[in-house]
Length: 310
Image (cartoon, rainbow, N blue to C red):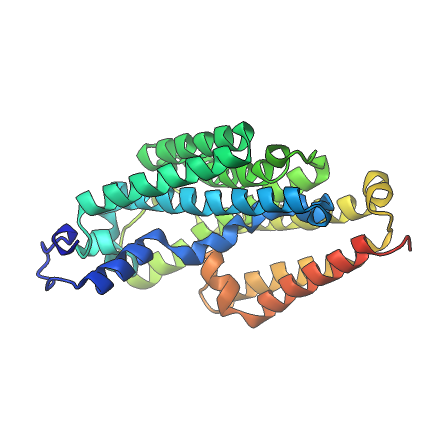
């Protein structure tokens, strides 16, 4: 495997163990937390009470973890020259020359094949959704990530496909309120990511992403305010809707809203006061306040929807 390592920047040959860790880093397993969106249908559809549906939800999550790693590798292959202009991304395995292009392509193919096999084992619907995700990321990497605003909507579409895989893909009818809330939180994370990239651009004076030349801080701040507000409103309306109350036999889901509001506010604090928030997956594990907000929301939600009518 050592001869799969590119030595073009003078790196010494890596051992098999080091090559494995470089490959794992290329897959970015820390980003797999984003695939928790697949499990939203199981949580709010009470599917965790049914072993077969729970199994399918977990398999769909695993398939999306592998397919998302494949998408990251594809994006890194397209961006390997631009990443050299970024203060952090220039150390990525492909851009730095630690992993060769041929090795990355082989790993990409293995991940793609494994994800599609896992998806097919769940349902043909999940397989189709995974294929759409691959296509979406391909056109994003090739062209659409340079189109202002549409680039963030493409990212949000990827999160929506995750939600659909965890609902219609495993036989759970999705709530319309949950879909629109999922879209808003995905747009919120996308625009905050662009805002953090502008912070990094100003601090380091390096050009990495062409679309950042179009985005203005004041514009992104407005987008963030709108999407954050819509996220809180749509989730609040979901908890109070007659359909939700009838389905979950509780009127108390409204008490989970403060967790959502606090998590969003804490994320915005990290973005503006600590120049963080650029990577939702990393920020999730870095800030204990956000972790506690998510854990509190999940525990209270499960407790309420499993309990009697309030």
